[in-house]
Image 1 (tube, rainbow, N blue to C red):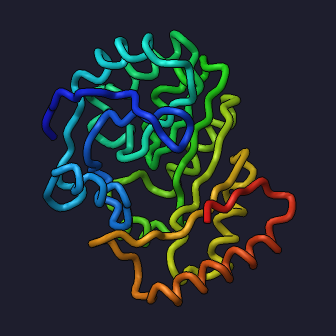
Image 2 (spheres, helix red, strand yellow; image 1 turned 180 degrees about the vertical axis):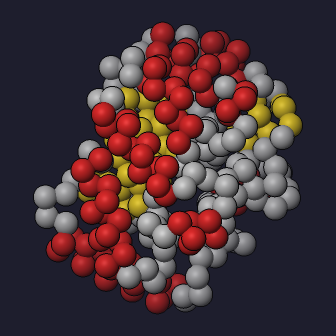
Length: 245
């Protein structure tokens, strides 16, 4: 892990109004992560998960930028996980949340880490906060293969439970749906998280140069996701969900 000085921190986003990325890179090392493609385009190289650059001046930048920009929803984070292991000692994300809370800007947090519970004291102070956990399988052996240094499935479900108990609005992000995953396995995951989630998102895998997930052709993959979407739509009556494809 290295420290850098960023030029900006509060950037426009298609999710919410702004996004904040306290780090470049992510040591969770998820094999399917789209962020590795965009990070390479920014000029960073190396195996995904092998490098993390912490934006040491992120809080200083936010102090300046937040007074110049219109209030809006802040998504944490779009190209990294704000609660990856480095955050446990650096607490950059925690400092960012404190600043956002001072002005009570709405926030959306999405993570694969139980570390988010550390900041429950701050998150619970927002009038508009939503926290989601990405969970793509109940099989923790498969999780270790795809997301080697992220929190276990059990810990993520526990995190959702504690957030829900604290009165935080929660969501589960089932994305990407693993190409070829059985409908029964996806439904089992939904059954596990539906009582803990105000909303469940589903998304498909979107191939990027150098990033593949499984061996399906593009044609077979598209057909698979159409079938899964149709089947889930029939089975999920009474569940609050959104497909992102």
